[in-house]
Image 1 (cartoon, rainbow, N blue to C red):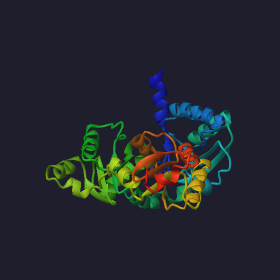
Image 2 (image 1 turned 30 degrees about the vertical axis):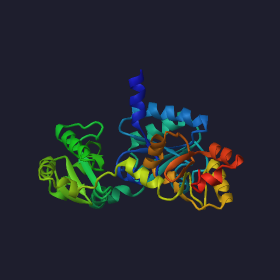
Image 3 (image 1 turned 180 degrees about the vertical axis):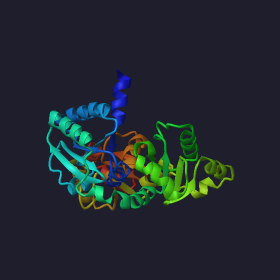
Image 4 (image 1 turned 60 degrees about the vertical axis):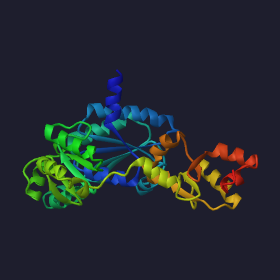
Length: 334
């Protein structure tokens, strides 16, 4: 039972940034993409997440995504999301349908209808052939390092793809991937586009590096690390960020515009002290948002740091202010 639940959860992708959403629209352009705009405080959203998980098991060819509406305001504003839950349906990177509210039967009907009709946006079919070359160019440029493989890095579906993923991960190389089994047009078209007949294929900055044999040769000659972008060590990055200024606040939003009530309150307290400080918007970077929780063993935001050391969240900052201890701490006197 637990394994089934984990499998269902894995089938629903969680998106945490505008950039990640745009990349997903591109990478899943040929499949039906169903996006749930939700909020953790709304119980009806939790129910609809369960519905999505069930639908994901029934329709493995459909990409199901959940996106916290208030955490990624750029996407919510772009698509005029004014309430949760709201569901948007995409095909070929274009919105084709919408459902507002927690209507499980209607959501199920819409998914089934779009799957059976293979619906495309108006006029899309007219341009498919001429757009393939452009689409392949966009896909090969979708990330600084792109791997076209059979399956996914989590579940490779051939030995060559599995070996390629192992090499890239061993060298701490940051890459995105595209499952060629998910799109026959891309699978065949990319062979001609790059004049390379087999998979996997690795691209850096849109240029083909080669297949597994080439990557093995580059690894043996120690050239691989110089060609492919390295994933920054997260702990080192967090250490740099927490020490970026003497007083650093990690919050939802920024000095000019707080995007949650707790962040707004802590800004007001800091502004009242007259001490200079810098902010980091955790909504802009999902890796930092999740990583900092583990780095400092503090599960919520905002988080206040002085000289790289965690002071605490809003409640602790309030207590320190009431006790008259906040200003000395911010000035590094305590």
